[in-house]
Amino acid sequence: MKTRWMALLTAGVLNSGCVPTNFVVPTAPAGAEQAAQKPAGPSRSAYSPPVTASQINGANAREKAEALRAEIDADTIAALEAKEKKEKDKE
Image (cartoon, rainbow, N blue to C red; front, top):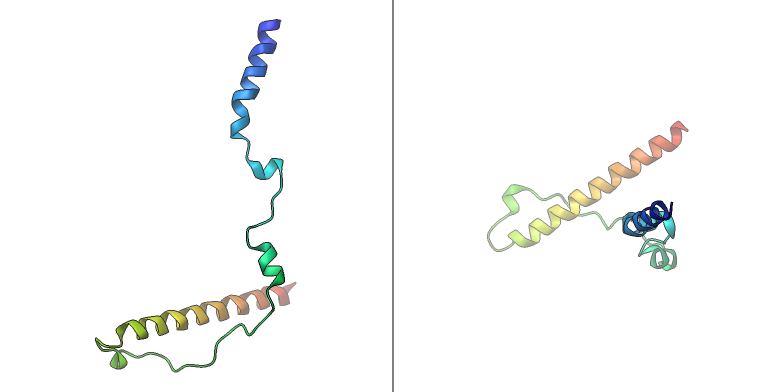
């Protein structure tokens, strides 16, 4: 009987490292405190004309790439907001 209890205790001790910590102690996300204190500002930047292939040359390629990334990000955010609004309207 003593051997069974020792085996059970040993198995529990060895298995304790496999328990996820979010089940044991809930923790807040890393940026939750900062996000709560951050003031709300405009969600989108001012309008900028779209980038076309004829505008790109060797000298401004990096700037145009950044402009394209910003354009894609703005379009993605707008699409996600529209989807959220549509889902909210369904409810």
